[in-house]
Amino acid sequence: MGIRAAADTGGGYALGPFLFAGLALLLVAVVVVAFMWMRRPQSGGETFPNTRAPECDVPRDNRRVSTPDGQTGSTATVRPVLSTVAMDQPTAERALHELEPLVGEWTFEARWPTGEPWPGGGRITFEWHDSRAHLVQRGTVDHPDAPDNISIIGCDAANGTYFQLYSDERGVCRVYEMSIGNGEWKLWREGEPFAQRFTATFSDDGNRITGGWHIAEDGTNYVPDFDIVCHRIGT
Image 1 (spheres, rainbow, N blue to C red):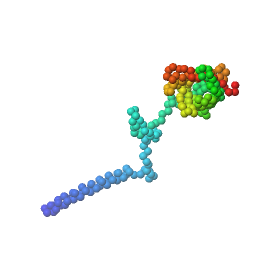
Image 2 (spheres, rainbow, N blue to C red; image 1 turned 30 degrees about the vertical axis):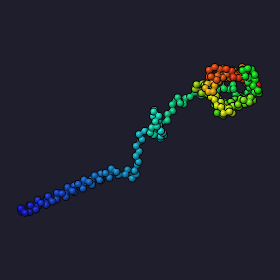
Image 3 (cartoon, rainbow, N blue to C red; image 1 turned 120 degrees about the vertical axis):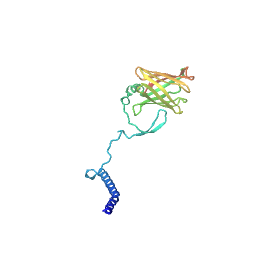
Image 4 (cartoon, helix red, strand yellow; image 1 turned 45 degrees about the horizontal axis):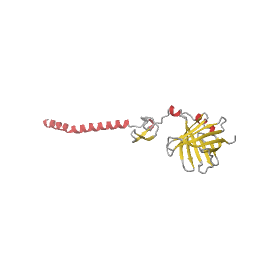
C-alpha cells in the first residue's frame, strides 16, 4: 500500500500543469467568442457607416485668412455673413436725377479773359451710359490747340457727391470733384500740374449754361482761364 499510495500522489502532481493550460485555453476562447459577438453585422446582414453628425455645420468654403499683422494664416472655414447694413444701401436715384439738366446736345463758344473769342466753337453731348448709372460726356473743339475729350460722370449715392473722370486725345487723364443742383454746376481739382475750378449756372429754361474756368499754377492764387457759354441744340 505504501508503494501504491506514493504512486497515486505522484500522478496527481503530474496532472496539475495540464489542468491550468486547459483553463487558460478555455478563457481565451470565451474572450474571442465575445469579441466576435460584439462585431456581428446588424439585422439583415447589412453594415452601416458612421453617421455621427459633424462637429460644426458650416459651408465648405476654405479660404486663406490673414492675421492682423498681415501674415497669411492657415486654411480656415469661413461662414459668409449677410448683414442688414450690407443689404440696405442708399440708391443713386436722387443723385442721378440731378444730372438730367445736362443730358442732350450743346454747342458752345469760348472767350479768353480779354474777351477775345476762340476761333470756331465746339460741341458737347451728354448721354446716359447703358447702365443708367453714369453720364458720358463727349466734347469736340474747333480750336487747334484744344483737344477733343471724353468724360464719365458718376456719383457716390451714400454721400451725395459726384466725380468726373476726364480724358482727351493727348493722353491726359484727370479726376475732378463735382457738384450740381439748384441751377449750379461746379468742377474742381488740385495737384499737378495746376489746380482748376469751373463754375456755371443754368438759365431758367435750362437751355443755356454760362460758366468759366479758373486756374492756379501755384495751387493757391486762381486767375481766369476762359469763359464758356453752351446752348442746347434744338431749342
